[in-house]
Length: 123
Image (cartoon, rainbow, N blue to C red; front, side, top):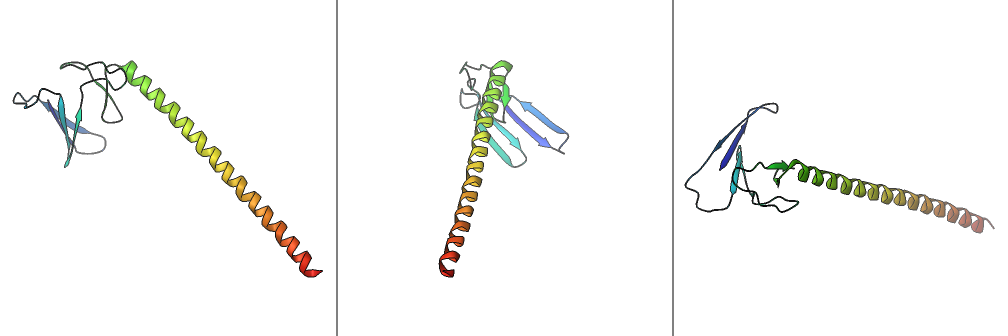
């Protein structure tokens, strides 16, 4: 099955689906056409549970080209991705805080060195 979409504006789109009986392979290899952009991807199995996706099965997509067999599998992946993103964001914040603290420590050390140097040259 080939899907082609032409986007007329950001708010509306027209998509058509046509079934091709002269398919050269038995896999469900699909071409998505959006303007001049063409992307191939497989819809053979659920990304999360690996359940086989057959012809006529509902396919729940996430992040563009990731197929799932059910809303539950897709939601589980969304929640896992959200949790991973929260962990990464927390780690980035901790690194930023550590870098800021290091900059403050280095600034204090430089100030102390200047004081010591000025005291030794004055003596």
